[in-house]
Image: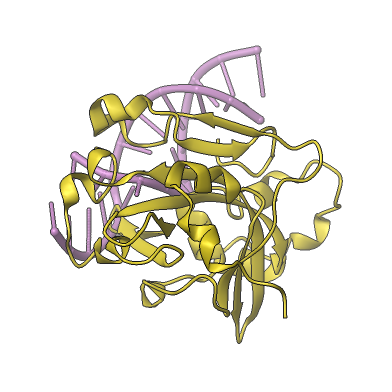
Length: 210
DNA sequence: GCCTTGATGACG
DNA sequence: GTCATCAAGGCA
């Protein structure tokens, strides 16, 4: 079996862990098959002091509870009434922080992911090394898209991401790849926190959501 | 009112 | 291809 992360990996400060998740593979094995992709875009949500975080002000509810626990677990939430998003819990117990996974570069299970996303079996058109066609870039570019593509549900709330069948597989930047950072998406309401450069992505990667 | 997305229509 | 707009949808 592929190696898993050591416990300590997830105990890094959130703003250090977030960029280090870039290039890490997010894997889900189900009876339908394996779906996986490299993480190419994330956003950090840094606890009670971050107005954009669900745990802002220390808000502790049934939804946010998992963020108060151990890092490395999955925080799944529903947004706009219809979409689910995946986050990696970070920060030590009591520090309700998390990292939103915003986009994957698919590495395994193209057909399964396309089917889950309702895109049809056009995966065979892909040729590695060339610029991927639009439908392929749309497969997991966006937090709700990647959640749907990997078949993650509310049942997976709180799952330990060091443990198959839903887990993070060690990986990192390829030679020549660089990290870029900028403001987070969709948090215009968050006052001054709106401008914090806590979104990280792999510069130039075609699978980033924007 | 929300850590989103897909459809639609205008324009190069 | 881009960019802008809009509405779907459930819950705190």
